Length: 114
Image 1 (cartoon, rainbow, N blue to C red):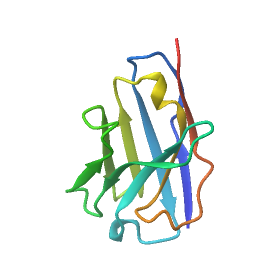
Image 2 (cartoon, rainbow, N blue to C red):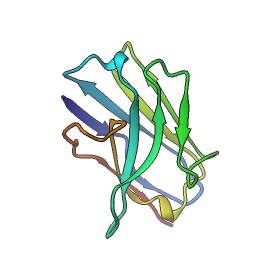
Image 3 (cartoon, rainbow, N blue to C red):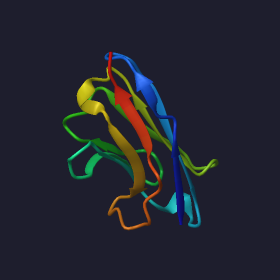
């Protein structure tokens, strides 16, 4: 299994970013996927989850209404659209299965700062 996250960067408060996670090494369309994040000095936390078909999504309370998870099974890619970003969203963002059991990718850094 290989998970490669991209799309992070530096953004001002209130801004938006779209993260991507390209997956390989397994039958992507058979698995629900999740996004996680780890802020400096904190443990990794769950952000959002999407079913294998993309029909069902779940969000952590901290991002509900601001973030949208989606997927393209034809491209083996899961996305995270992040709007209305705040400094508290600063973290390294990762994708993985819903149990977080696969080898973690390198993540993509998101920094929200003016």
